[in-house]
Image (tube, rainbow, N blue to C red; front, side, top):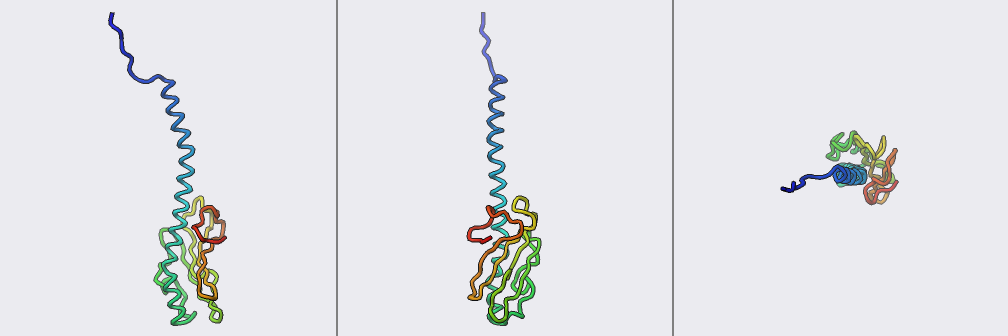
Length: 146
């Protein structure tokens, strides 16, 4: 008599593999979504930070009246990460500007509805990153205040 050699996997073995894959996916998918949200917030900050130097130079050379639109400092009115970019002139006397350059995040998803990231100019000429709106602070870029 000849013995038959068994080949393949049993149903139990396959079910165990599927269960392990399910457990790994349950852990990996939320971590991936958090990573994507953090990256989107950082990219939005990068979009507006590009105008910081031009904003400062324009203010120092021409005064507050010269700043009225994103195009004045070399930014678009919107980008892939920002549905709207707004620019506000600093106070002509103190030089401070709340929301000097701001971005309403486009399709914010887990970041929060109406999420805004902005750069505020202090009266000493320093810029501070601030997030507001319904911005989930765990997605805020490093160094941004709430």
